Image (spheres, rainbow, N blue to C red):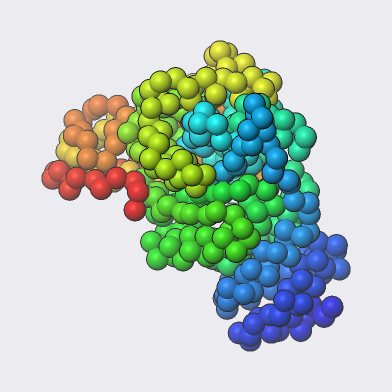
Length: 425
Ligand code: URA
C-alpha cells in the first residue's frame, strides 16, 4: 500500500484501480492510511471526479468495511414482508420520514428507516423523534428485525457496524471542505443503504438553496449515480427530485416538526408536505409491487396514525404525551404589503439553528422546543403588520441572530408571482 502514489494518480486526473481503491479504503479504516492522506485523496476526488466503475468500487469497499444486515425472511402471519426504505439528501423543514414510514408500513410493508442526526442548518430525523417523550432510536439489529416483523415501521440510528469506513470518512470530509463531491456523496449514502439490507429504496434528492445540490443538473447527476449503484447491488432503486429552494411545510425545529407530521398523519397538514409524502409513498409502494394503491386513503382513514402510535410505543415512546415547548416566543411581522415571492430555505434553516434546534459540532445537545414557524407560503397575499414568523427558543438572547437571518429570507413584491408548480421537479 502506497497512499502517496494513489493520491498522485487521482491528483493527475487518472483512474484508480479496484485494488487501489480497496487498499486505500481498508487502510483508512484500519488506521494505516493517515487522515491527512485520506483528506488529500478526498480533495483530489472533489476536483477530478470518478468514473462509475471507481464509484462502484469505492461503495463496495465501504460496505465491506462493516456488516450487512439481513432483512430477508421477515414474516408476519406466515407471510413474508417486502422491505422498502427512503432516503432524503436533506433539507429545511423536511419531516417527511415521520409520516411516510408508518404510512408505508400500514400497507403490510416493512420499512427499515435508518436515520441520522442533523448537523448545521438541516435537521436530522432522529433529533425530531427525540422530542417525543421516552422514544429511543438505539435498537440492536435483533430488536429492529422483530419490530419490523411485528409493527413494520422502525426509525432507528444506524449501527456503528454499518459502513464504518463512511462514518470515519464523513467526519473527515466535514472538516476538510470535501463533502461537495457527487461521487463521494453517492458512495457515502448508498454504502449505508445497501449495507442496511433493504430490498428497495426510494431517494428524495433535494434541489435548491437549502440542499446540498443547488443546481438541478447536479442533483440529477447525483440521483442517476445513486440509482445505478443501488440497482447494480440488487436493490430496486428509484429517485425523485424535489424542490428545496423554500423550506418544506410551515415549521423547522424538532418538536414543531413532529407536531406538523402528526397533522399529516391525521389527514391534514401543509399541502407541500402532503404532496411530497404521497409522491414518495407511491414510488415506495410501486417498488414492492403495490402499483395503483392510493396512499392518501391510509392518511384519511387513520391506519397510518395507528401504525405511528404502534411504532412510537414499540420504541419506548408515549404517543399520547404532550410535546416539549420552548420557554420563549417572539413574533416577527411583515414590514410591507404585497405578495410573498421568496422564502429562502437556507436562511430559515440557519435561523432555526441559531434558535437552538440544530448543532454546530457533532454530539452537541439540541433544544427540542426551539425553531421557526412561518405563517405564509410563497404566493400568499401579505398585509403589512401581519405575523410572518414565530420564533421559539429556550434562551431569548438567541432571537436577534435568528431574526437577522429571517430578515434576508423573505421578499414581498407588489405583483402576484406565477402559480407555483409544486415540489416535485
Ligand atoms: N449524506 C451522507 O450520508 N453522506 C454524504 O456524503 C452527504 C450527505
